Structures are given as C-alpha cells and as structure tokens.
Image (cartoon, rainbow, N blue to C red):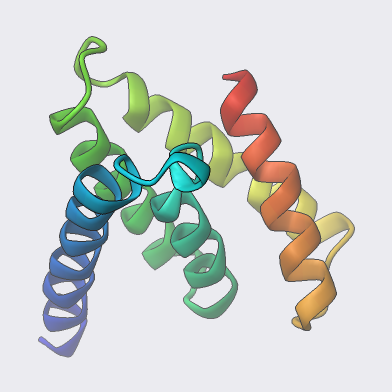
Length: 116
C-alpha cells in the first residue's frame, strides 16, 4: 500500500514539474532547453530501486507526451531508452552514489535525450 502512495506522490510531483517546465521555463530564454523532468528522473533513478525507476521513466514519458506535438508514445520510448542507458552506465561505470557521477550521468543522458 505504501508503494502505491509513493507512486501517486511521484506522479503528482512529476506532473507539477512538467507544468513548471512548460509554463515557466519556456518563458525564460536561457532555461528553454533545460529538461527538468530528465534531470529529476536521473536523480530519482539513483535513489529508488530499478523497478520503481522504470515506472518513473514511464510517468515522465507519459506526461511529456501529453503536452508535445509528437505522436503519442514517442517520449515514453525515449525515456525507456534513457532508463536502459542509465542502467548500463550505472552498473558498469558509475557504481558509487556521489555528486560527480550523478552530474556526469545527467550530462551524458541529456546529450542522449537530445540525440534521440
């Protein structure tokens, strides 16, 4: 039961972050290209277990798909690919949880998101 409450709170938090990204960050010129959902997903993926982080990826992709003009499911697939890259990089290269691996992983996954 507690797991479901966490998922509901995470969904509401991701929804609020998406609203902030769409409404506030798109109006400020130097913050237009900052992907707040991706950064939040990477930081959350370091903290939560793998099963829960894939649900966060699905939620981020779903909410991003709602407010974009691309075909539905495009961002869900992109976030799942980013999640898969995160798991590969985390298990093989960045196995410690400290500030520098998190920042480096965020940079690598942001570049991957921009390329996808």
